[in-house]
Image (cartoon, rainbow, N blue to C red; front, side, top):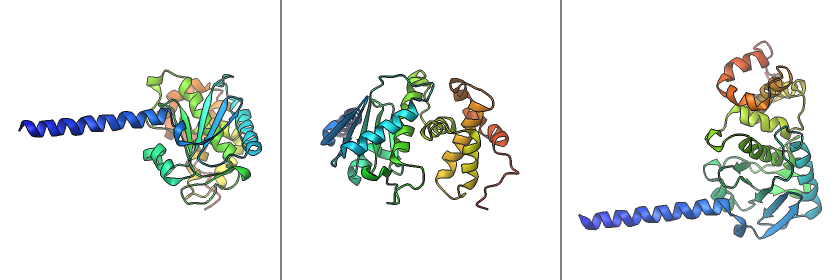
Length: 245
């Protein structure tokens, strides 16, 4: 009987060691990425060559959008890791592997992206195709950088373990250049119902309404996450169906 407990103890210890190693690599993934380019306060790492002129333009564009946020504080350092190899992306994204990008806010708030086309300012999705329209790589970068602003704007223990429409909606609002509620609503009405973009566009429209029409400070909107249905009813009335129908 004692032998079984010894074996179980070793297995448990081994699992603990693996978890610790994994957490350390999430916090400090630099050894997995051989190329590095620094642009202002953002350092970009990649497992492929990084076109300097193009990545500089992309980072500067993303930073200019993020700087419009009331949560922005100059000098905030940010590390971005581009995983063009699928195994590397699956390792660092973990259960979020279906996403195009992720900010590991609890682990040194490192940002990870799947395959990118830096020269054309594009990011590939799970389908293997680049994201269309105005969802450029700069847009995705600004979105993930805003998650870091959100995390730093509240006590760490209040940051939701699961994302919600307020967090995503504000990131979308900033990533799209703080476009107006009317612009966001018009885009929402034109996004097909079966599109993965629908949820994010809806959340952006709802947050834009609260910010611009009700003049609610973003720090107060965090508490509205449970009011999804009531806010949606006001922001996107039922008599304004999607133009895709």
